[in-house]
Length: 130
View 1: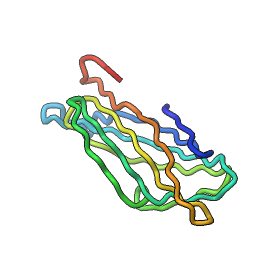
View 2: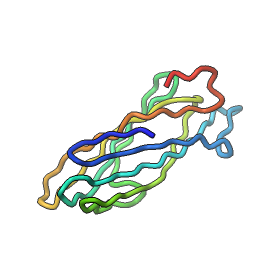
View 3: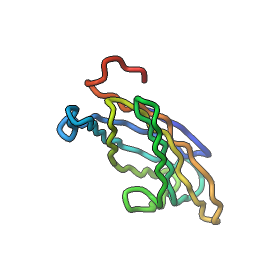
View 4: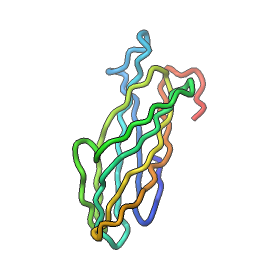
């Protein structure tokens, strides 16, 4: 599990290689990743945006920006947790992801929360660099 705390917001990520959705003969490798956001601050926050950098084993990086996560913009009160699972395909047997969430406080103050860098490794990778 990978973890990072920014301004009292703890983000934890765990990735899982999905063998049944991958097809190495067609250069398709798929992972799911589960993110848990724990609001350890004293303020209620709303997750407004996401910004991901997804890098494959060849060093090619794809940038993904969007509103919310999995179709939601969750409100997370102090002490509460929000968890979701999503997925990512790559054309290489390994890679990594890192990013940020755009959050908004109850007072309307916007701030960013770091998502820790985490590796995407499969059993099809000859040597794991992550």
